[in-house]
Length: 167
Length: 135
Image (cartoon, rainbow over all chains, first blue to last red; front, side, top):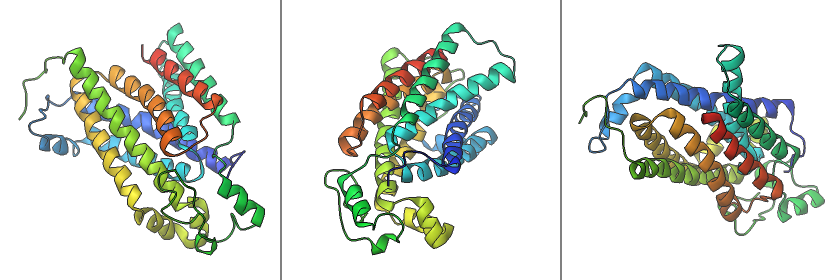
């Protein structure tokens, strides 16, 4: 179902997507850089790294990210949700400037401006690609409100996963 | 096997290979996961009808979801490996910005998403922005 305008709850989910990913990555980096170098010959040592505190915290944040990300993907296109993840870099940069008082160079301000511009470009458009079957269902009044198993078996050819279940 | 610490810095080809592994696994995982979630349907609607357990069951009974998660797990361990040898300031922006572009291409080809001029422009702007932000 196409959502031209997202609800406040859906924007909150996109915000969680944006915040949790960079914070989780930062925790992983902090954890991995304090460990000795790991060889590909013994991948089990990577698994052991998962149980160190910083990496465990990073994983917890990334689980929060993944739950929000899956929810967002269920009502929006992948190419709509992904810029939201990049917007997290802007949030972290702004936090470091105004909360931690770290200096930000002109080049970084340019990066912040470009990402913000890119995200606003995507946000102005529809969040979900409208497919012929969506129009058909909307025209027949079946689309959206009924449980999925009451919707006739109509499929969209070509896209991965579209044949898996009736829409 | 634990190598001496600090580890020798990898060369440019090895660094590119580590980043490429993260980007390719991550793109495959995200496309498969997006396909899975589209086939499951709107989780908000499912939760309204069947509760949180119903929504979780709908996700966990989708085979495409597990294929996607497997690739995302591969991407995660590739990222851990890369972070162990390279700086975050190189790995995070390089993989994030390249993944945006590869996902836009994969989204158009495999998910048949309407990647119009607006979304291409956004992908390129965000890609350059991430690069600037990291340097």
